Image (cartoon, rainbow, N blue to C red):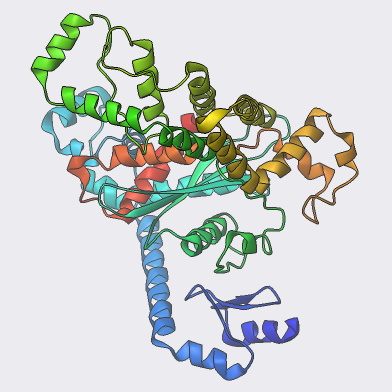
Length: 456
């Protein structure tokens, strides 16, 4: 079907539909619809799902108009606005304003009438949230960006995914923003791709979103996109392979945890017999590097803890531990980040024997699958002037790449640790006494807190 006919459909059926000339997309239902025959579109419009979505969108629009009219008719206090922003940014629950001692203190030293938490929650949170989004949009505008997405499971058992966006600049590190946070029904390729499109729609609302089934298909719509698997995750997978080679050490670490857990007498005995030495660590498998630190601890304190078995060679462990620490840094040059990977690869290439060879094979397999990393290595060589031939031969790059695009990769990240930081903030907000937080309100608090000026 020609582009003209698709545009005719959009013109005929209204702004609820959009097209890029190849597919017809329903904005209300956020899905592609059949368009071979006109009655396919008409049938979709008559479905209950579409009708409910249209009704919901109209109700949301009406609420926004009512809120706008209310805001225009009421003069909001700058002090209340700043107080609300400060408390949310500092993760101070708004209900603390109900505490008489706290209220008296604020009134005494500010000379202002202190509002109740409910007043700030109902009248100011949305304004601050929208202002935060507007500031992000203005900052990003037409800049080139990198996007990092990761998901986690919170204490309530919900699948939570965060989207981090950073600005790529040729001469200095760009600002980093938490653009969006969403609760997913389930974490898979489809929901993540849909989340990606939704996040891009926040920055560029006029761009038509498309629900796709795989990350590679996204490149049809975002032609300059390079997908890079988080290298910190890759190193962690390799570290797990090492751990798998030493089951006996796993048992030792597990037994040591049991010996000192909730045993004050044994802890006291340990302090008496080994003064100046910390208690044995309690590694958590899902926390990067924690179980690597445990065997290092036993290695370093072998003589003080007589039941410890030397598990890993210290130098080999350092080759994994130090990169994980380096990857936690912000604003690192692409060449420096890649140098960490290359250093690990070089050291692991020397591994031999029954334990060493499987680890080396694991490393080679993991990084071979990371196609985007290979492309970033080529870009890094161009930026460092190591491979001038690549400046002319762009056959290995996406079709519309040019030398002007390459310079913006100078500070491109190769990990998703910025998303991990946002999850830490999420966990802090969702404390034990704040479990009644509805996710929509939780998302607003999180985005306001993570995008405060000092974090940019």
